[in-house]
Image 1 (cartoon, rainbow, N blue to C red):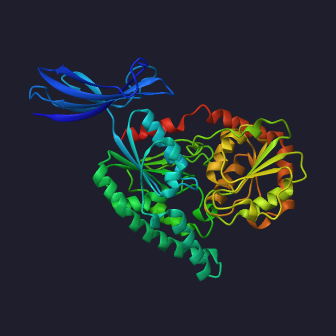
Image 2 (cartoon, helix red, strand yellow):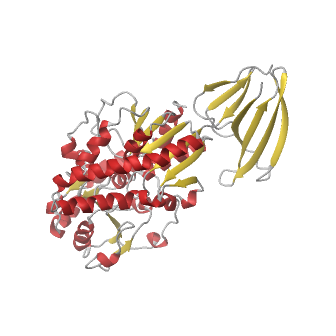
Image 3 (tube, one colour):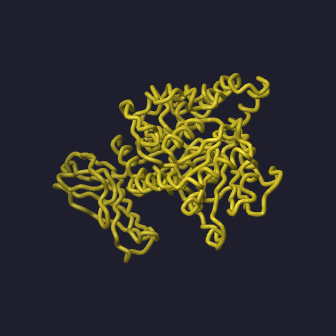
Length: 476
């Protein structure tokens, strides 16, 4: 008999030249096996990574047994999770995992990439399927990325669906929701086609997607186990608060549709903190809280002006996915313009400073920049209450003023307020005066900062990507 096995071995052997190649013959049981290997050194860790192709040549070599073991070893030695045994001699096998990332903007990509990189660190092979915005966002990571046809890019499709729905309903958010839902159902059917093609050609051992990808993957019906990484709080079935209280009316039909499909994946990972999520303890089988995965950011340089002496920093942020929330930015800048603070406003990729009526002298405006670098030393976050930005602020112990605009933002803001780390200004009350009063209350409330710092200390003792990776390996 003969068989081909692929596996990865990682060790600290810096003396081996990067790109080295070798062949070897091994004896397993009573017969030989030939192996070829490609070796490279990861410069950031100085660790040797060897990928073998192994062929068993002897019928007496014995059966191949694949078994799961525990967490990867730290330091030197094997760094993966699966073992192939030939008569007592074991080798580590790496699995192939396909990540279906529907968009680079918004909060869905960061949790997926945090999980992907954690699995990559454990020795698994990663492939990404996404739109052009995903390709741009991951350009510096050297991940194998396959791109959807451009007409399937989520941003333009969703934006067009919202514009058409609002025009057809004279701006009625509740009436627009079902129209958006139907358009996104059609998009899911269309995008299932390249997903099926990727599953057939790549033959992954597991597929991982986001909440926005759940319907498309459901329609694709992959033969391998599949996982949903939910980038916000638990949405059902039977969530701790009614969905009507947690989501804007336009988003509600879409979220209900996605939540109804969450019994289909083999695993659902909720990328939030269970204490933040109202200490909810009734997750269904196959659902797990893993902690805030959305704090991951693509590699970037720390802005030099962040370290210049001056007044404390305040971060003002609106959604990185198209949303008509520029009024939050304008009201916040108006409220903060005469305060002893340095203000950074991030607008996201779809807006520019030309849309702002006034930019105060104490304000810098960027489209995209690392929020983590600022939140590590910021005194305050003023935000649209996106789950990713709120989790980052909580991770770094930064109190917040939140103006929930739509989508899941009402639910995120309510949870931050219940935790005692945020003041909430309702959307229809978000004047400069109201935001200014909320800013004053937060900055004067030492107890709120203490609560935020307490939760930061608790969260920083956790490792959400590692927890998520371990649960996914349980399916392989």
